[in-house]
Every structure is written in structure tokens, then in C-alpha cells.
Image (cartoon, rainbow, N blue to C red):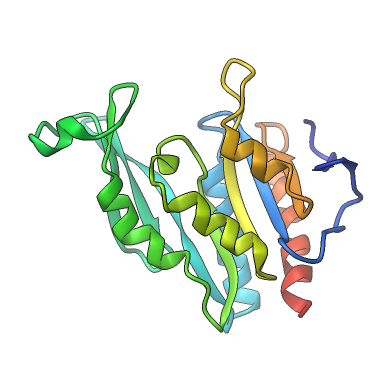
Length: 209
């Protein structure tokens, strides 16, 4: 999808138009295009313009050793970290962990940090989820927490992977088909301008009760 187009579940909607309940913006695009960087910049801008807003959620980041990627970690918005997946761990416990390629997914570590961040609180203003992907979805509690957010009136800004070999993850399909979802595709040609497109939409959501 090119920059400037916005998809909803059953056709297209104009920029800034959102369903009342379950308001969410989904950013997709190929690996390495800058989805996490985009979300982080938007968060920074929102904190500057709305210093009292309560943001909850997490980012996913690579773990690198000697220039080589050896895993992934999740990082909360206040900087706490936990392992998501590793290609170097070889403990007896890790042999039972699910795998994505060469990476073993540490579900317990992921859930211990992320699940509390996805709980709805009275003062929550916006949820950030980077990302709703195959590794994260190994947690049986993660996607129900996302659905719970969508049932609230609290906006959600999330990243989702592009379909692999033309096939989307079922949970991602369900998110995309949610009536409150706006889907934006990030690529190298639009990544600088995309922040200026998403930020006003989110700012508008935060002003509405």
C-alpha cells in the first residue's frame, strides 16, 4: 500500500476517520524499514505535546553481539528490558521453548514484562505495541490482552509484520479486520513523512473522550 492510502476492514476511509470503539492504527512494512523507529519518534512527540499522558506498552529491539544479531528483547516505555528470543541460549529449559528460525522464544520472560504493561488502567491514554508478530503470539495471554484493549475506548498504535509468502498470521488478519483499524504501510519512500501523518490522527484520538 502506498503512502496516502488508508485501509479499513470493509473498504477505505479518509484520513483521520476512526471507529468509535477499538481505535487503532496498525503500521506494517518489511523488516528493517523503520517501524520501531517511527513508533519511538511518535511517542517522543506525544510526550512533548501531552506531558501528562499515560503511555503504556513496549518496543521490540535486536540484541547484537560483535555485529551479529543473536536475539530480540522487549523494552517498556520507561526502559525496562526482558529477553524475547535468543539464538545463543542452550539451557535445558530453553530446549522446550518454541522456535522461529534459529531463535528460541522465551515466553515466560516476555510475559513477565509485557503483560502488566497491557493492563487497562484508569489513567491510560494510549497503548504502544511493537509488535504483534509470530514470536509474541506464542504467548497465549498476549493476543487476548490486545483484544481487551480494542474493546476499550483507549487508542492503540501497533506494528504488524507484512504477510510472509502472501500469507498473514491469523491474529494479524483479525486485527486488520477490526472495524476500528486503520492500516498504514511503511516503506523507504514514505517513512519520513509517515510520522506527520500518524501523529495528528493520534493527537485527535487523545482529545476525544
